[in-house]
Amino acid sequence: MMDQVFSLIQKLRAKSVYFLVLIGIFVLIFPQLTDNQYILHISIRILIYMLLASSLNMIVGYTGQYNIGQAGFYAIGAYTAAIIATRAGYSFLLILPLCGIMAASMSAFLGFPTLRLRGIFFAFTTLGFSEVVRLTILNWRTLTRGTFGIPGIPLPEIVNFQISTNNHFYYLGLFLLVVMLFISHRLINSRIGRAWVAIREDENAAKAMGVETFKYKMINLMYGTFWAGIAGGFFAYFAGYISADSFILDESFAILAMVLVGGKGTLVGPIVGAIILTILPELVREIARYRLVIFGIAILVMVHYRPQGIAGAKAEGRRIDVEKEYEAGISENAVETTAPGN
Amino acid sequence: MESILRTENLCKYFGGLKAVQDVSINVSKGIIQGIIGPNGAGKTTLFNVLTGTYNSTKGKVYFKDRNITNFKPEKVTKLGISRTFQNIKLFKNMSVLDNVKIGFHTQTKTKMLDAIFHTKTYKNDDRICEERGQELIERVGLSDLKEEFASNLAYGNQRKLEIARALAVNPDILLVDEPTAGMNHIETRNVVELLEKLNSEGLTVIIIEHDMSVIMNLCHSILVLNHGQKISEGSPEQVRRDENVIEAYLGREE
Image (cartoon, rainbow over all chains, first blue to last red; front, side):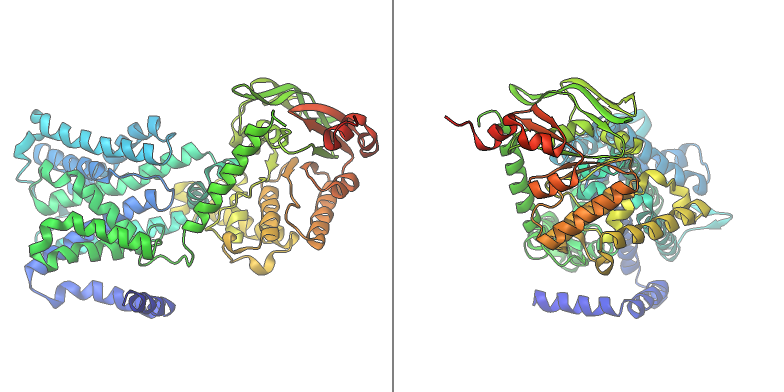
């Protein structure tokens, strides 16, 4: 059955222009098709997850840095919006970019000492960072009201137009997502994106080509977390109330699962992943509490049967490469360690 | 002749293992310098120290009379030293053309805003990468495969792509590490001809190679390493007759 689903996706891919136009039209008129506020609410949540998964994909999928603490940056964005909007009352148009900038600058603090770490070590640090953010939120009561959370975030206003209904939020979220995807697309197809992918593929070779890998990993991390911050700001305005509960580690794992299941290293992948993994637990409310179990199983199934993700295009498995690299590593070491003996 | 790359008593130790020991070489501009030696002699380690992949334990490296000892690899590349790898290190999940385009990184300057708004700088850089990338791919004979993922290429073609990618950096010196390993005769001849052509255009080449017919025909000067030490140096004729070299390869007559 899985094979049939995948071959269907391949066929649709071949006719991707029509497919894209159809999806575009559907997405644009979607809120007009239903008055069901529940469905609209879910759609907006999906949009937020699309933004989050896409932002994480920029880091995990394009530069291969395993950031598993994206919820931390999401939280920074949300709290930036909530605190400034409730206390200073600045305009939405000023606050939203600030959310991204805050998240990006925090990631720079984190990245400066840790981006030199590779693989699992970087993953651990980001995981820890995400917890540090959550605990800071819980304990810095004068700023964040601790466990009480921040209620009463005003509705956003764009040049005298108040965003108030779910419909409005839907289009605002969609707009942010489209802007994000557009910019990401352009970056990926430029010198910068090529440097990112080169780092993912082989960091030493990238250096040998003159790519300043530390600098480009830093730009990449800041870019990815910037959009997580924006997603956080949008979420804060949409929900009207935020608390640290929204930003637990589970959230990081959920976002990562969306990227992996959908297909990392493609722009479409995280979008597909976000849709599937948000709708799945909603369809069967009884199993919603086992959300993470479902995500875990989804990741395992994907890694085994289709490591490039549902929407991933690469035809070949990664396993062969790993084996080759392993052997190359052994022979390289063997040459070095046997040198004096012979 | 003018010297382009020079080392003074260069050493690289891994703990107690002396992979490269007191190696001093002087590579003249515009020649093809060969480096040979039995397996584990320290040839690749020497490359890694020259290009900054490893920091040297002792000794100095000069490029055009500038001390570049322990410079970072990306900086060494920027100054004009480019290399290929013994165990091919291509960007596997990128197309052949994109692999070469990375090589133009140091010669282009597109910033984030340029890329987002497709400014003049972006368009200019894009054109350079596209045109010169195509040119280089044609040069190594991979034009038909330019859209293919690097991981799908045959072994010999992967080596050729590595050379194209290294040339994209626009280097003054090209360091090639066993460029003909695993190639058949025709492919080997193509690579040898390419290296000769590049050299005649003014590129200095340093080559590690096990195929003696390649080394003896191609190189103007040869350095022989064994156990990390220089045991001989000179023209192919001199090296061929050197007793130390014969001993290192064949063993001593008892």
